[in-house]
Image 1 (tube, rainbow, N blue to C red):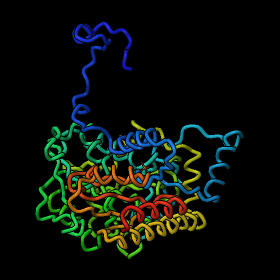
Image 2: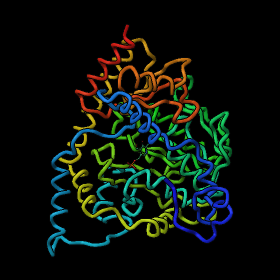
Image 3: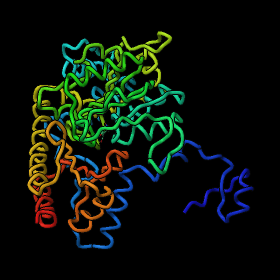
Length: 427
Ligand code: PLP
């Protein structure tokens, strides 16, 4: 479509085309973005396949959305808070932009107990992705960044939109002014820090989306030491920390010195099935300072009070239930369920002779299709198995040759998906 309203300033372009435009110049940073955010593109291809094959029962092990119902202890709290809004006693309007005091305290206790993180360092939000994009506002356009390659796309895309990067080099699929830290099977999916240049920010997702790799304590200590040497800030994305089962650190604050160089963001999305409910948090330690000595926490507070008006009161009540003992056990029940899917998916690809990574400390299995472009493999699996996966190269050039298979799915769907895969690739 695109027929805008009549705009006075729009004479020049509208003289050239029949469409009406405004006189507003497009944000050049948005124009720098590549073909589109990965997941909408996958959605488009899925719809196209469905239109061509109306009877296909497509199963998605693609975008990494949760499928299983939220445990009742948690929905009871959501329902109670919603019903309470209908009463004088239960009604509340705007709350603190930083989140309910009680929830901030409980999050600090539950996830950072003994790590010296106080409730004033925990900021409740509507999710990690939102916090990641607001973080770019915290640092501004004149900030250099490093990301793991491959990486969850929000770090790079938010940085591009903020203007912290140059243009996309179509040949390498990399933006200028971003340092890409290669995470390959050759280095165990942990970057060779001796080859990484100095940047202001280091986005680090652990356990990793998409590779499913989980860094050891020694690796994380090396990362923190590296950041401290360079005077960098690590933005540590712990969205999948609850999936860690091998004793590796679940928070970056388990690492010596991290409170002087790390922000940690986390979310109930993959913990409690809150992808649609929306609740996350970000920890900004008081000890973390800008070069002029300003506490980052103070500026983050300013950003949150300006850009955000507090997470939903109903949803925060749900969050409070998540951090009770019963709620936490229930979340672990969900994690265990998805981990069983991981095991099935890992076994399937391993049996068929593929290289399989991840899926132990993370809900993603990273499958190698050596020598084949990821998008071709994605298309083939969709075409032949009616299965949606995620092409590894969509997460960055180092993801080429891999496909990410998400373990977020109903067991029956996962079992069906495995049968279809074995039919096509198991021979
Ligand atoms: N960080 C990572 C690494 C993710 O994979 C995701 C979601 O897929 C998010 C953040 C977004 O989390 P939220 O739903 O809290 O915005």
